[in-house]
Length: 391
Ligand SMILES: NC(=O)c1ccc[n+]([C@@H]2O[C@H](COP(=O)([O-])OP(=O)(O)OC[C@H]3O[C@@H](n4cnc5c(N)ncnc54)[C@H](O)[C@@H]3O)[C@@H](O)[C@H]2O)c1
Image 1 (cartoon, protein in one colour):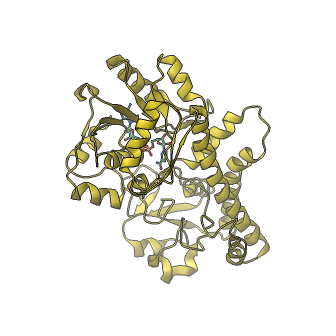
Image 2 (cartoon, protein in one colour):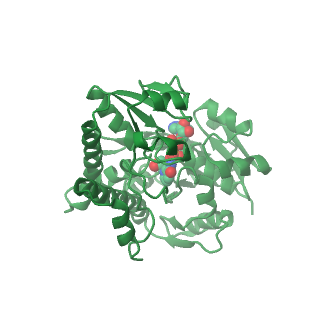
Image 3 (cartoon, protein in one colour):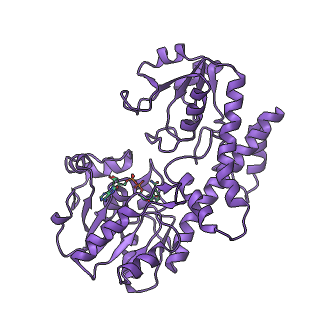
């Protein structure tokens, strides 16, 4: 049966889920940014996602975008919240004000509305919202997609997790199963606190894994040992695995840094060492690399692409951003080459549109990930990319 679905937030999570669900349902996307709404209604997906953009252009889907809640029809079966939850270091917790104000709007309109939170939230948030809005109809369902392959991941979920065991939880998991191109993704029903914990512990584990291989690389660089040999040698043990083991400048992106900090904060007085280390290790790694770079005494450092991953346009919380700020504070001139950024951008550093001029001007080029384009200039490059992969 075709259901009416309304999704708040037209970022990676909202757009990818919207397209996936629009295969069999009627979907309305809501965003406060008129520019995103217009772009979407003109047939252009407002996120960087090749598979999603192609799918959107090729298929006639029952999906549209609006920026005004009043334009939404009354018979919505499910509201899905894909709103940002940035980490607030002053309160050591996520900003959840966007979610809370949208929940108010929804329940003012329909006190029996069913709402699924796909945003990552702190453990206990869903129960607190059920209490606040006096309803059992708020569910948490963690999202595991990756930026750059958001739509693909929505179609091929590794697992579907719903933080509830009731009838609506089953109905919602069926919606996701119908959208899935995987034959049999695992479906798990659990308490909302368990589902919230799954999301935070998953991302903290991924951050820990990146941090582990980065510390291995820090050790090898310091002792003049070949990192590549060591990583291959240990990763061939199937319990460790030849994946997600490529050294980098540090973990970054929208989710791993903020979700690790949120989990650390959630531990409060509960004994732990690792959670703290996951957060601190990233700073230690960046500081180690800064020392290495300063030892090379460059006057002008070129940053080759700000994004975390090759092929991505997304530089949210990329590790290199901290490195360039600290190098700049040490008196080094920073220049950037990145075809994905607006050249008038307010980062405060000079950007180059001409690759060869960029290469010529920089004494040293930092590249979190290497590319064919850089190959002829390897003597000028500083990178820890060994396997050319982010998987
Ligand atoms: N990006 C990922 O890979 C990923 C993966 C899993 C989970 N998540 C989580 O999902 C949530 C959303 O992430 P994202 O990357 O899609 O975010 P995003 O920043 O790409 O998009 C959020 C969108 O919400 C809009 N918005 C903000 N306030 C609004 C409001 N009051 N009303 C309507 N629209 C509003 C913004 O304009 C923006 O377009 C976050 O909690 C994130 O942690 C993200």
